[in-house]
Length: 489
Ligand SMILES: C[S@@+](CC[C@H](N)C(=O)[O-])C[C@H]1O[C@@H](n2cnc3c(N)ncnc32)[C@H](O)[C@@H]1O
Image (tube, protein in one colour):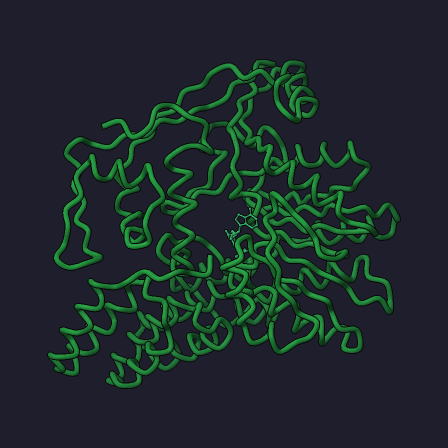
């Protein structure tokens, strides 16, 4: 059954599903295995402090805006590091999210309402409206969720890629989110996907998404009709001259938002953009190279070389990292022309890709190939990385070293609080192995995110082990009847 005719990527079912999945909150990262450990890490917070050192004047406290703060995890770490680095110059830090409802959630965070220098506001990056001037703006994996079109430059010709979606006529999905279970057939699934997906069906998205088939086709694209025609025609000429072919995501929304932000700054400014990105056109050799997929979540590869050309036209610096074989890159956009400052930016971006050291040690833990020497070379910030600590905890769990496993998970839970969903689940399993069922229940009672099935299931197992039939039944019922409430994202 056809779900959708050929349309641009940003109008597609796959884009629609991916956007809606974020309404599931933090659990979306764990359900779809979206990496988040580096962008919320102490190491990246230190990177932000190192960046501030590149341009900060001695006695001038900085005013910082973070776009798309999510759960505020990175903001909290940056503020704490800034306070130790410059204790007599309080940072002015603004966290933001793009809807009022989500911004309200940020306001309730302890570190936000306890500090007079920390504030929250709603900021839709596509329509920025700053309430004050900022020295630094942080955009971490924001651009790569904005709507875009996939373009292909092929020896001077330009094409737009369109996508269509279909499901099997026989597809049946059991809706187990309420009792009695309901059966959704192909027609009902089509209807569901074509509207605004109600909260109660968000949990089904992963299973539905696995069954959608996509087809792609290209059609000629007239670059002269595009809003940023000049930039595209430059690329088209290069592709013709060098007989090059490459794929690239083009987003009016992104370029408009960058333009609007730049116009709002009154003094010198720096934008730190960490994204899923290509730094050279030839890195995009197929449609698949332009999209990053984690389960049903999609991220659109940002052409940093296009952003660079956009900035050069406006007399701005845009310096990008060139991390080898990596889809994650960093761009520093700024109005500074001072040579020392520009060189400081370049030096910062020429260091080894941040996050790599802890990632490499995490792989050793996963492969049970670790010696103490491997880990002792890491900095304290690197050692506190979520992915590393979680891999370490899994390694100890496998070796039945449950106390060591719990030590790693305690560190994560202290650092990430309720957001450390996978750590809560593994800690409960370790406590159960040690026959501390009551303690496991107490631990899980701290988590109120009902969208992460694994937590609810853990409770079922605990009551089963305690031979408490009544509570086991209650927890099975609450697992199936769970009500998806509104979430942070
Ligand atoms: C992939 S998450 C990244 C969250 C966080 N910065 C991190 O790195 O973990 C994408 C974020 O972009 C935010 N977002 C999506 N569209 C946005 C828009 N138009 N303006 C501002 N933020 C947006 C979402 O709410 C979400 O917080």
